[in-house]
Figure 1 (cartoon, helix red, strand yellow):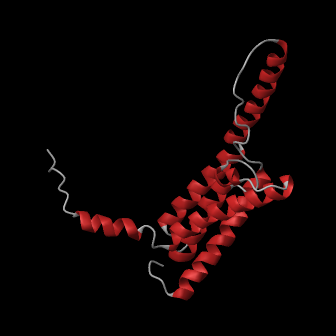
Figure 2 (cartoon, helix red, strand yellow; figure 1 turned 90 degrees about the vertical axis):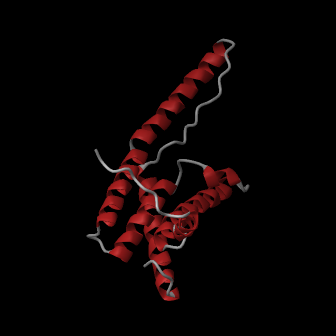
Figure 3 (cartoon, one colour; figure 1 turned 120 degrees about the vertical axis):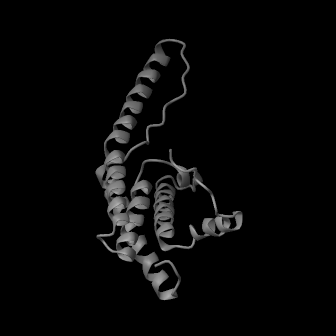
Length: 172
């Protein structure tokens, strides 16, 4: 029989550890990669529609892929900060690959299916009395949108890591 697990950390230690999460460039590379991608989407939407729509900040789909930007930002910053052969960097590259593959295939297919179902629902509504809430069609990404997210995440990670190093901040 194994020994019971004993928790020796105090609440104050856990509190300090929680804030350490936000005091590293790997978090900020991913988070800022996501933010920049969403702001690019909002800007592109504002140019296209000539109105500012803040729903783009939380939207899925579109150019560039914010999910791709986030995971690539973390992967690139880990590579730059910890080395390309580091197990964390390798794990991040796998997660980034899976995320981008999923965005360009599975989620894209679900979005195309939603578009078809919405078209069928509209046709059915015209012929019969039927009400249905339309499905979200912007779920996945084209390969170009994923590539755009990849480039965005890479650029943001390089900028964040350079700023972090120049400022002499810890956790690098």
